[in-house]
Image (tube, rainbow, N blue to C red; front, side, top):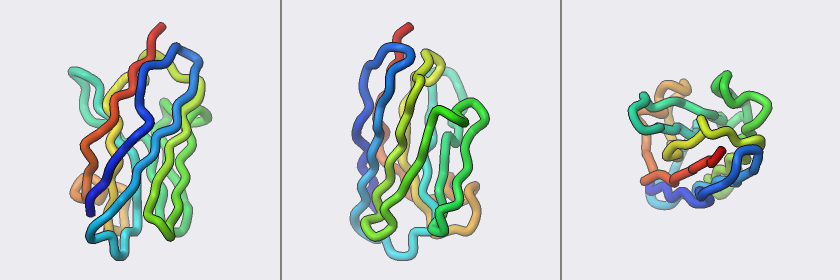
Length: 120
């Protein structure tokens, strides 16, 4: 599958962004979609993920501020980010997998990423 992210940008702390991910190509039987992020000098981190049955998981650092949603018919994904903090600054990647576990996202399809920068 080919994934394309959009919606990143520069925002002040406390602000909001809405990241979107659209898919094309071999998108049959996608089970789980999610968002990873990677900040300079840090390891890649799973931020949020959603399965086809709408169950979700979030990193502890974003709970209550980030919300993931999915249009299964379109295999599109949205990440609503509120109350942004400087430590949220990172490249955000959309991922998708046919696998059964959130950990399968790492070995799935990835987008090119969208930069989110939060100023203090």
